[in-house]
Figure 1 (tube, rainbow, N blue to C red):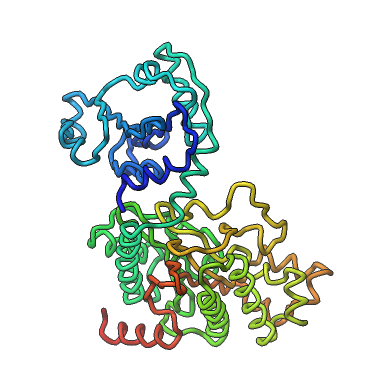
Figure 2 (cartoon, rainbow, N blue to C red):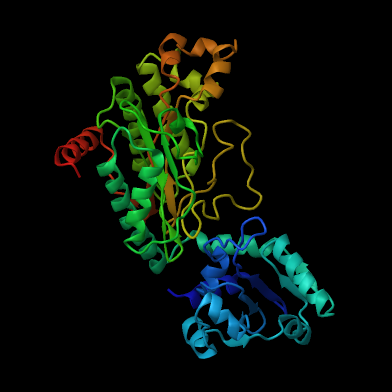
Length: 456
């Protein structure tokens, strides 16, 4: 499939388009706090999905009446080349992005005024406001602007990946797998978290993936229980756990892998026990991935497996069913099992418009609330964390404390957390796992011993 097929798929959703238009504004270069410090450019994902344009300051229109695609390119003054480099000539833009009509430096407002649409579909309120301001500046009467249908339609389109999109995700995953492995090879006591981050990013960039998919997590010791930890300034010690949750993009398509490794190369008995519980939960959920299953079924299966493991270890008291009913598992597993993956790390389409989110601690954090279908990409990411901010109040709560073996749990509150995440493509038969980074305890420890013995 192609970018044209993406646009056609979107057009097909507007069954009675009339003389309406779809308008999308591409991204611009962002600056830090009013300075001339430029953040690396990243195109708005929906714009990238429909156009393939990876340059700033473009906009596009789909004419729902004719089906034609108009691309509006900015006019660049000659001095732009002095500071920003080559100015792409119109003929190259036409060849590269293949619009039905290319407008270089033309007035979008004037074109809309001449076209006189009945309504314009915008992505969101921000883009609606920008378009309204542009039209007002040019003295063009504001048409009816609708801001909900387009985002829902694009989410529906993007949730099922075509073969080219799957290949880009496979590329991102393949390089991400290697980068994670190189971090495990380098991991030693005495390193700082930011050193591991540097190793990871080096191996991504050297293979051509220069855009991180999200702000990666490199967390050691108690920091590994902070779900979105980003400081990376702690020096790691023997006996610590190190959690890496990071990935880069290939052509805009993300990979998102998490592993939790022993800094000294060997898990302590308690770390091994907790890690094995999480791995068992992940394997159980992965086995269940297939078309027709709902994400909450996977989540609850993983949560039940974690709960049963903690009961077997003597950390929780009572029947697994009763513990689940009372949401005790959320003290250790407070987030959803996973999310869709694609042009965004937390990709669109997980929750349909009008979907009711259960007001239960174990389910309200889920990012996916629908049956899985072939062509979807999701992450499966259970975790088990010792978070003082959750457990210490629970020890004093009469409704929760009797479920907890405080004597066993409390001495390990600084252990941190364990999370394991793989990326899966839903297939007709089940799932294709794109993640090959070691996660078996014996395999991880064997790899670490070999890396330490060779000094690599």
